[in-house]
Structures are given as structure tokens and as C-alpha cells.
Image (cartoon, rainbow, N blue to C red; front, side):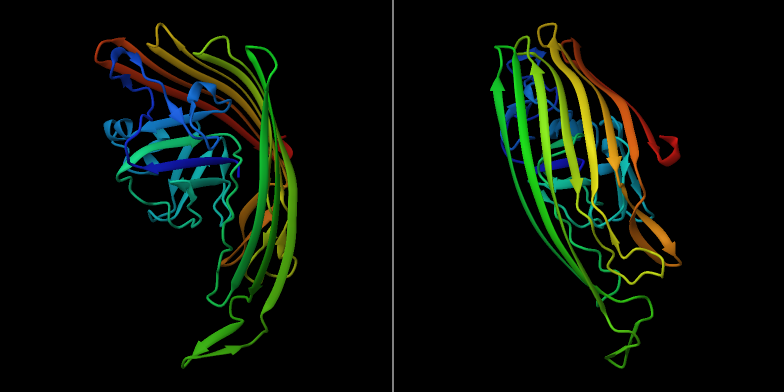
Length: 346
């Protein structure tokens, strides 16, 4: 998984994005996030995160995922004709498949169904959009293109992270993740079977295919904190998406299986609070290099399949700013620029 969106249902908390501190109306309050499965000040987290509080969601009338396009740098949302079919894109990553590169979590539970993201925001406590590779890896179910087709996925993952304070200001962090997935699919093709008078007639026998996929994915980061209100960081993370089986019989010459996808992700960033907490700035630059990118293609009339389409690259800049120029007025702004290249354009 390359990026993630976390949606948390409401309850009492102090989470938020650049809200005015109730104890001092001329200061931006501290923002607490749980990107690393623990509560941390967003400035201390060495990755790009946009955190939206319930107040921010209400004030901006953000009623669904499509509303995040105006608030989150390099995020895009497209509906495919109907609200429950959509494509989310973060940093140029845009894939419509049953194993999406951009995952949506609701109260830390992965929303695995690609047809179920057209929901409206109700009773939301906060939203966290993590734009870099994440340690939590979803295990989506296989797509069932024909009613009798069956896909079975089994996945294991283990990961750990260790930080060491090199000096008072400099901290190094290293992590390692192991993923293992076993996939099996039993399937037929269009017209291989027919249901008539309640009975199924097979014109061709079902086919079964399976595969095992595993990877070790490291992470390294270095952060420099000059004080409690700033963080300059650099990170490298290896990304992995398992290979799998297209759960429908494909035409001759089209591969029934596809290989794993890997990515090398580099990011440098700077977060700070200035002017006695009246100005918040978060800036980052990123580079993503993919190997054996997986893509969902139309390979024959009415037949789609996931294929490895080669290498690709995405690079860009992101900026988020919040300011309290006068009492009672808060100004928020964000900017994102992204360039995606693939194939012969690299």
C-alpha cells in the first residue's frame, strides 16, 4: 500500500487540524495524530500527513471523499458514473482494482471493497490523510467477475521499528516489514457456463490457479528537531504490493497471473510553528520509483485484467499553511504539484 486515508468516528478528543487553541485564541493548537499507531504531535512525525478535525470538516462542508480534493495536496477523487464506484489518487497513484494502492480505513479497519467508498461523512471525529507509504498493509479480497468464481487470499505481516537519539536534536529510525501472501482463485470465462431452469451447465471446466508472494520492506528516516516546534526530516521506504491471479478466464496470450509491484519512496520535509504559534507550515518534496507497476486494463471486449505494465516514476512538491493574522480569523491554504512518468518517458 502506497498511501492511506484514516477516518475516525466521533468521540471526545483533542485531535484537529490547525484549530484555534481554546485557552489562547491567538495560537494554533497542537495537532495529535496516530499515523504510527500511537499518539504523536504531527510536527514530530516524519511523513506527510493532513489532519482534519470535525470542526474543519463541518466548516468546509466536506461531506464525502470528493471534498478532500480541495483540502489535501496531490489528492484527487473521481467517480466512475455512480457514487459507489470511484478512483482515489494520491501523488499520482491512481489504480481501480480490488487491491488498491490507496486504502481507506474507518476506525483503523481497512475498507476493502472498492465499490464502497461513495459514503457520506457523518459523525466524523477526524480524518488523517497519509500521503507516503504506510506500515499497515491491507489484504483486499479478490474480484469475483462471474458468480461462481472464487478467490481466496491468505496474508501474514510482521513489522518492527526502532529509533535512536544520535544527539539531542538528531534522531535516526529504522524499520523492517515482512509480508507473505498466498492467493488462490477458481474461475471460468464469459460463456463457459450457463444457468437454465435452476441448473448450471458447464461448457468448459473451471480452472484453478495459485501463487505465493513475499517481501522484506525496509524503512529509514533521519529527523532534526531544533526545538519543540520544528522538524526537518528525510525518509526512505520500500513499498510492496503482492502479485495475484486474475479471477476470470482470459484470452490466449494474456497472462492469467501478475507479478508483485515494488516501489522506492523518498521524501524530505519540514514542519514548523512560527510567530508564537500563529503560523504553521508543512512542506515536502517526494520521489516515487515503481518497478513492475500493476494496472487494470481492458484486454478484450468486456474483459478486464490486471497486468504489470513496467516501470514508472512520480515526483512533486507539497505545501500546507495555516495562519492566525488577527483574533477570530484563521486562513488555511495548500498547494500540490506532481509529475508522473512511465514507460519510454522515463
